Structure formats: structure tokens, C-alpha cells
Amino acid sequence: MSASAQCSTAPLGRPASGCHAAWPRCAPSSDRPDRIDQPAFRRLAMTSQLPPDLIRLGDELERAVTRQIAVVGKSRRRLSRAGLIAAITAAVVAAGAGTAAAVAYLTEETVAKGMPGAAVIFEDTDPSCTTTDHVVFDCTLSRAPKSDVLPNPAKQKKAKPAPQPTATDFTNVKQMFVDGQGNIAGGCNGEDAAGLHWICYAGQRAVTEGIIAQDLLGQHLEAPTRG
Image (cartoon, rainbow, N blue to C red; front, side, top):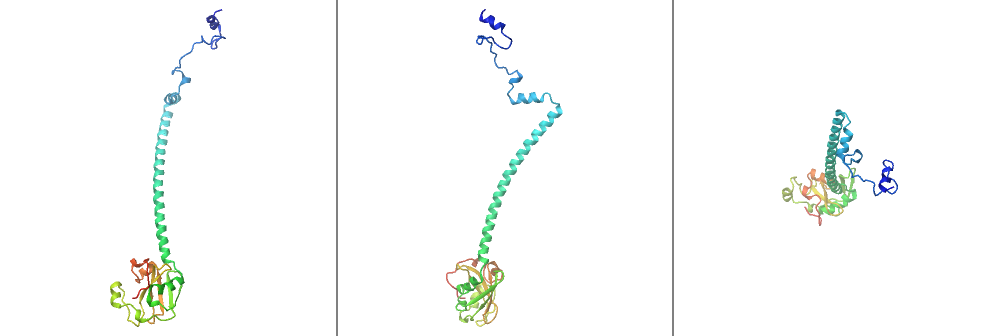
């Protein structure tokens, strides 16, 4: 029997032995349902048997999900920018708060030493101070200041609006004090004529009380000042 005859008697769908060469090969066809690979064709095959209402509902859901994804992406970008701005703002505020605290929070000993460190009037007076809030200090001198180092009222009036007392009265005399680094940290106000009692204010409070000017706060002082 010839090879062609053997192949013709083989069962349908399976070639007989030795008939591989003669077995007809079919070219791939895009018309066959089991060969559909493109997404559009698959979607068409899936939805062709669905009711129109379900197809329309599916399309609307797809569009809604797409819009939601876009909104979430924009929100994340906005949150990222807002978070960055908030972080920068917090850092600036923290830095400012740290600077203010460095000027305002002072110990009793620092203020007592800072009085003669800033003003000649307090030299050899041995100040001692007490406080409850580290902003307002009640200071007492062991010895009265020397009257010959009081500020000149005429000159002080130009620099500060507050009037100055006579040479023998220390009431309302205003003087600065420095911190441990020699920076102007506040100011003191004379509370009695003898000059033994002073109220000192730290940081911004000294500016508020009119003892020192705003631009003096935090400036470095090389040596105690006279007047």
C-alpha cells in the first residue's frame, strides 16, 4: 500500500505511522475563536452575549475608576508638596523658637553675673537674683553702685525715650545685662533710690518693658558699657 493510501485510511484527526510528512498543516487563522488574542476581540466576545444595560453599566464603572485613579494621583502630589512646605515651616518655627529660648531662658546665676558683665555701674556690687519663671528676675546688690558711673541724662534721652534720674537716685535707671557668651540678653530697671534693688527682664520682655531697643537684643558686647 502506498504512503498516500495509508494516510487516507488513518483515523480522522490522527496521522498514521510514517505519514507525518504528508499530514496537511493549516495556517493559523484569526477567525477561529480559540485563537483570539487581541484585547478588543476578547472584550467583544465577552460582552456580545451580555444585555445592553450591563454593558453600559460596565463602561460607566470603567470610566469612574479611571477618574478616581487620576484624582488620587493628583491628591498624592498635592499632599507631597503640602508635606514639604509644612516640614520647612516647622523647621523655621523650631529654629526661631530655639533662638528665643536661648535668649529668654536664663538662670539666676547667669543674670547676676551678666549685670556687671554689661554695665560698669554694677562692678563690685555682688548682685544676687531670684526668679520663678526665668523671665523676670528680682536682683539685689550687696553694695550700692557708684554714682559717678551713672548715665548722662542728656545723652540717654536721645538714645531712649525713658527719662533718666538724677546722679544720686537710681530709681528707673535702665541697664543691660549679658548672657554667658557676652551677648545682650535683657535689661534691668532700678527700683529704689539707693540702687540696691533691681528688676531684670530677659529676652523680648526687656524690649517690651522699654529697657533696651529691639536691635540690641542678642548683640555681642565686648566689654561693660558706661552710661
